[in-house]
Image 1 (cartoon, one colour):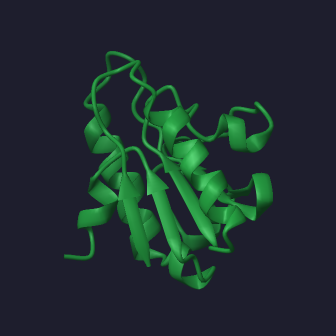
Image 2 (cartoon, one colour):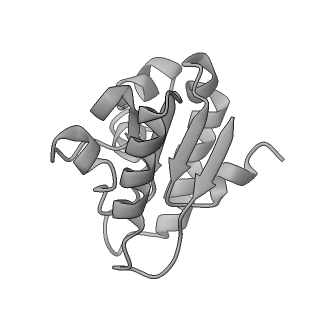
Length: 135
């Protein structure tokens, strides 16, 4: 599985770039997943026809940390050209570190082998964390 991560300061176009890369790579025949790691949870919106999707952290909070594979699968969506889309999300503003929320969400993706079970061949996200989980 190939992985690419975009990161940098707010407002520089990470979500736009990752969306365009995901779309282009999917058109080349790869099975692509894009995992958004912005607390605004809008990085996959363009792949979802402009729709903001519920986040993994929304599910974790909704189920009071009793998270199963089925719970995570409820917030995995199919977007443009079959791209698997998910948003990590984060805590409510002022209630903790967004990075911890992203890490927890990505750990669930890894734990339940969300990408592997769907034969994803290319992952694009806005955080280097997912690229490091398997090390």
